Length: 335
Image 1 (cartoon, one colour):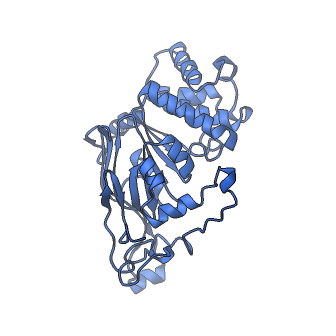
Image 2: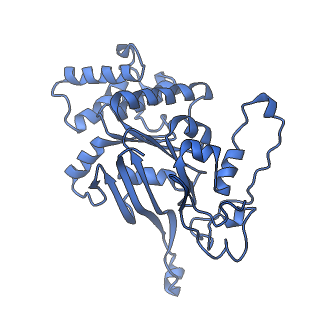
Image 3: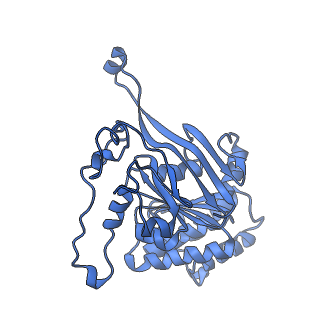
C-alpha cells in the first residue's frame, strides 16, 4: 500500500435507543445500535479503497464519520498524519471539509432543486471564500463542468437540476466535490442510482479525475463487480465489522471469508457458457439486528460452515493469512 493519507483506528459509532417511561422506571439498561463496531484500516495516497457489504452493514456510517457528518463514539481518524477526531471549532472543521468531500448516492436529493447548476457549484466557493469576483468563480465553475465532461458549460449553468438527466446530475455532484480541489473524497454508492449503461462511464470518469487531480477515494458500494473494476483495496463489512480486507484482486479471486464468498456468488455471471450453471448461495437466514449482536462470530447464524461451540462462543480476530490479505474467521483453510 502507498503512504497512507487516511488512517482509521478502532472506530466505533453507537446510536442510543431511547427507553420508554416504563423501561426507565424498571431500570432497564441502555441499548445501542452498533452501526460501526471497532474497525481499523488505512487508505494509501491516490488509491481507491472500497467498503463493500449489504445494506445496514455500517459502510455509509463509516463514510459519514470520515467526513465528520457524524461524531464517533470511540476511535481515531487521521488525515495526512493529523488527528481530526477532536476538531471542534467551526474554522477547524471548515478547513477539514475543504480537504475532504463527499459524493452522495442520490443525485436527485443531494442537489437543491431550487438552485441552478451555477448556484450549486458556486455555493462551496462562497462558503470557503474562493474567488474574489463572480467572474473568477464563473471560470472555476466552467472548468469544473468541463472536467466532468458537461460541455459546453454555458449551456448548462442556467438550468435547474430537473432539466438535466440523472447521469448529468451526478456529474454535477462530482464537480461540486472536486471544485474545492480536495485531497480525499468519500464516494457513497455514486453510481447505484444510475442506469447500468452509464455506470462504467461515470466510474471511468472518476478514475481519470483521480489521475489528473491526485485525489484519493473511499468508495462505498454493495456491488463487488464495480469494486473490482474501480478499487485497489477492498474491505468487506458485516454488522459493523470488517470481516475481510485486502488487495481487490486477492479478495475477488481468493475470498477467505464465507460472507465474501456469498456476496461473490450473488454477482451475475457475464460468460454465456456459465449462465446455466446454478450456483448455490452459501448463506441462510436474515441479517441479525445491530442492537442484539450474536455472540461469538456475528456471521455464524447465517454461515453454513459454522461449528457450534466455537463460532457461536468465541469472537474471531482479523488475522493476516497472506500478504496484506486479512480475514475474521475461525475456519480459514478448513472450508
